[in-house]
Length: 91
Image 1 (cartoon, rainbow, N blue to C red):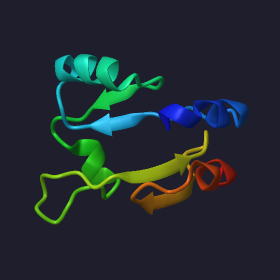
Image 2 (cartoon, helix red, strand yellow):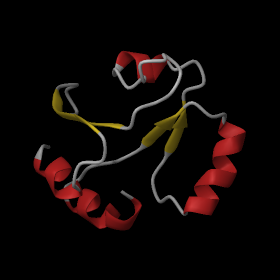
Image 3 (tube, rainbow, N blue to C red):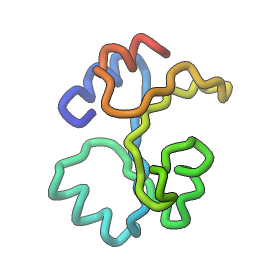
């Protein structure tokens, strides 16, 4: 996402990441990875559970991409790292 942020902006989309690490640990990680999108903290894995992004062990996170419309409708859902063009087309 970081390297193709302009595609999201052109499509009027706001990408963000969700990670179980603490907000404090995110600060360094965001700087190190030069993220240009928000990274949300989900230490209780509430979001990961709701969006079925937990691995079989119930603790690890499986990268999962969702496109959710302003009305709350899910337009796209896929595990892994789908091409950005596929994600943007789903809006």
